[in-house]
Length: 76
Image (cartoon, rainbow, N blue to C red; front, side, top):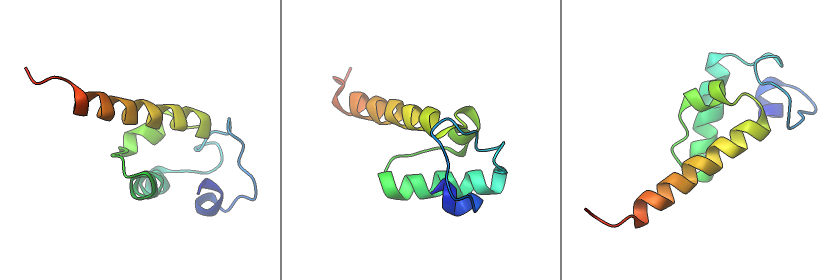
């Protein structure tokens, strides 16, 4: 996804989105595509807070775990 949006042939897991030429409009597109592909609410802020694919993947995993935990938490 990053390769396509940034027009780069290869993006490594530790490459920084913004150092590769990413900007706020592209970050919005990344978040939108991730929401659609993963069906999880990925805020645009996540791209800014976690600018490498490795960091963003961990952040999304954390979001997904939080959503699952909240879904099965006892009502109280």
